[in-house]
Image 1 (tube, rainbow, N blue to C red):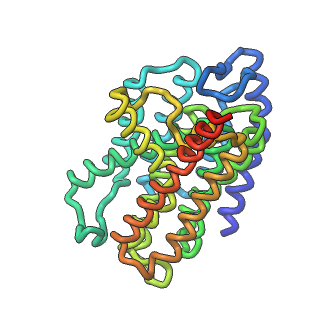
Image 2 (cartoon, rainbow, N blue to C red):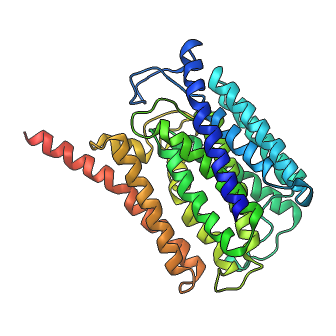
Image 3 (tube, rainbow, N blue to C red):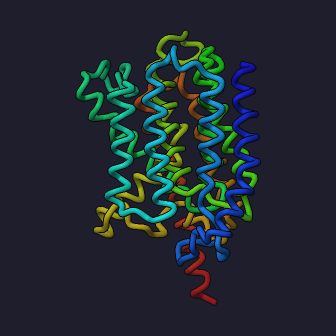
Length: 354
């Protein structure tokens, strides 16, 4: 446990004290995220916060873990570096969606095939157990791509991606602590430390954004953590966690980024007949802003909702059949996501009567 706490402190320290230099560099070199009609900020703000987050995390993680006992983590580090490089390139000189997707796919393939970090079983969910190798790969690649882009998509208002990341990783960290999985606890606490330091400069009146180099790597690392969580939960007593429920629990923990991304992709592809990567204002956080919330209020609302789903999952995982849990979470997520749009319609009707 003390190694995990040291990793937390080290990552926090490196990230916290490197960000001012990155902010100054962004100002001097004019490396700004320019305002447009989708963004609420009016100032020129740098989007290289991912450099500080990644540097703090990777230094602390390598320093306090022994790679020799987990050789698959070498592939994780290689894939993370590749995705980080793609993100930096996109932050400095925007890439086409196709090129960025190619980088994401390459990182996913490295960690899945070379690192063998993949979905290996459904553990009885939908009466599906062990997956054959190729089916496992075929399901794991979309999962990585979904979560990488999910955190990239929700990084649209100050503090949201970082705050959701802290909530999600903290939840998995608690279970790794209960399981005695020191290495994965170190991984989690190192990333939490880096994110909390970053949020000091990003929450509220942001002075820096995490950019694609931050959001894509965040989604990538969370995917790895979630897969490890599901796999490791199999080997522990049911009073810690039921293996059959672990995948559903992981879905509940990640409900905000996953549901928002699937919802937006559906709207873009099937309703608007556009590319799933076409930028718009159809995200739930945009809907909250449109009904009058500030960025801080919208972020805190979504973090609270995410926390509600996590608490609900903890209550239901030992009492409700997993497939019914999944149905409950989907129905609740759909219902809650409609509230800001209903409020917006009522505001329009009320304004029309005046």
